[in-house]
Image (spheres, rainbow, N blue to C red):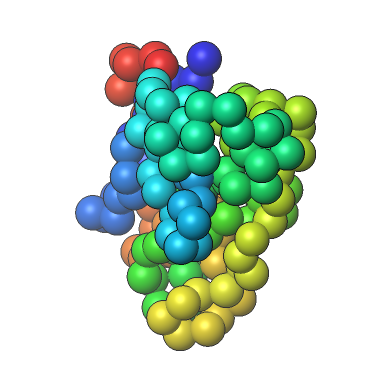
Length: 146
């Protein structure tokens, strides 16, 4: 199981949400993405899609929003960029049916300034901070494991 981590710059105040770099969601009938809180992700999927939802429906209507930052305007947001992100292998378990198929629903593009210079928090770990340009983005284990 993945650990719960903090993500932040070791020189400035830039930080990202605690967790795994994103979260699983399920799409309701109106098209809204509902955050599936861990460890009850199956409860959220059942509540939205029904207890007898087919594997095909679950795969079609679940995904994983990655925590992202625009390196041009420094706004933070979530995108479902699927296999476009090199992520930990456990993510395939949390999205869809666990068959290793993640659907990409969003373009890698900032919703604020339309820049394509967007990185996920997991892609930034070990890289130079996009804000201060001096520090490094670190992944810090909180001690919690899910």
